[in-house]
Each structure stands twice: as C-alpha cells, then as structure tokens.
Amino acid sequence: MAALGRMIAVGRVAATDGSTLQVESLFGTKTTVHTTPTTKVQVLFGSRVADISQGAVVAAYGTKHPDGSLTATFIAGAGLDFTR
Image (tube, rainbow, N blue to C red; front, side, top):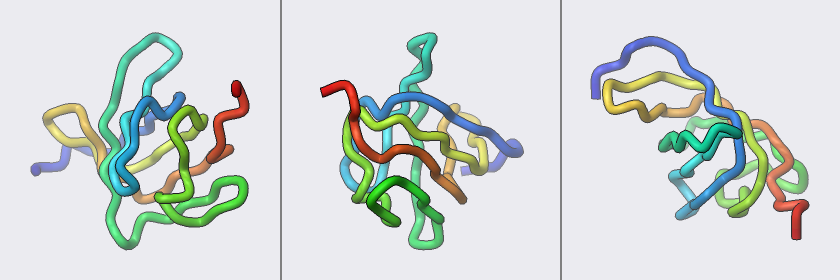
C-alpha cells in the first residue's frame, strides 16, 4: 500500500482479530487499523495488540493508506470495555 502521510483514529474498537482493529469514531466512521510487530501499544493492563478487547477506547497513530486504513506505529487507550 502506498502511504499518504500520517493519520490518527480515535474511538471504540468495533472488532479485533488480535492484530487488526476496526476503530469506530464517535461519528460512526470505521477505520481499519493494521499493526506490525513494531507497533507500540500502551493500554491499561497490557502492552500488546492482543491485549486490546472489543469495546475498548483507543487512539491509533500511524501511516494513512489510500483505502482509508492506517498502519499504526502507536496505539494508546484503556484497552478494556468499561461499558459492560
């Protein structure tokens, strides 16, 4: 994928497979967040992408791609769904 610059996605994790996240913003826009082995993760009770559960609130920063997705260099957030 060709890079278009930098991007941030902030919202609730709508889906995750342990390496790719679907982050849904407050406005309902969904962004696919790809990760790599070098993606840094700073969440409550974890430091791996697999530690981020569905429903968690996160901010992902990284490289934007033409399809609207991003490859994260850093992900921060709660890591847990506090609405349950």
